Image (cartoon, rainbow, N blue to C red):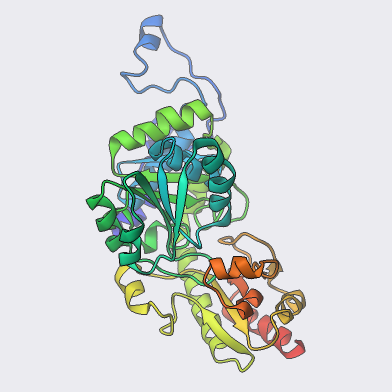
Length: 389
């Protein structure tokens, strides 16, 4: 953790370049000027900043920090998590590529596959439950170029064997991508387990204050990093804004202490729910009852504030319970200071539930994010709602 703390607090910064300010400034400029035509002509060789669509000093400081935290050689920041995810696919895949995708990755990732990459690039997609490595290997085709992962995954927090997946992928020359937003670079290191591209949605824990949209990719392969930065991001124009980068740097400085509090609160809340007579099941990676608890202990060093649970009652009761909550607000994101609740599966069809390998009663799944209000406050809120429901 010592190296992580140094990366968060000091890495990537050079105070002599900005008048010894303890906090780097926000470089709000679109253009950088040069002393001579000759120095301008050598800007690529000297790695000078030229134009804001290509690179920005504030964004670069953020990238240096996140690359160090993940153990990568290069990080590339984008204007949103979806811009980052799309860039990763564009950098790796080509027309008629085949992708293997975990069934319960972030829904917009599946949407962009279905609405753009499949019809426009004739890409084919096979879905995998993230559990059986033999099944994964059986899905590989001659044109398989990418495996898309999210672990722990959304809804029921399925965990996949990251190192095992990476070994299979490398044996077949396939690039791997993982959404590591849930664990952050502090609690899980996918690059060290063999993954090629790690993605974070920075509106979640890295930002931490629910005030930015951003995404970032981290790689160990320098050539892949250059492709992501100099070809995909620069030409598509998806760079993160300097103010958002500055806010993300601010968020990183408190990441460790915030995660510790999120984890402490969430474990107390999860145990309370697990022992409540009206709750059938709790899905949280920090509980020993998680069906993949041993795998979690091997590849995660901590847990965060997100979990879900299912009531013993009719699934339709879930919405009533969420509406009765007073501290938990209703919202679709997570990772900020605030506690949130949502019923993300209520509108899902029977076919949607079957696709995700979920039970019909899981339509009443309630996903909550435990913010920084304290476990006693959140348990009291849940208790009053459960009593009324």
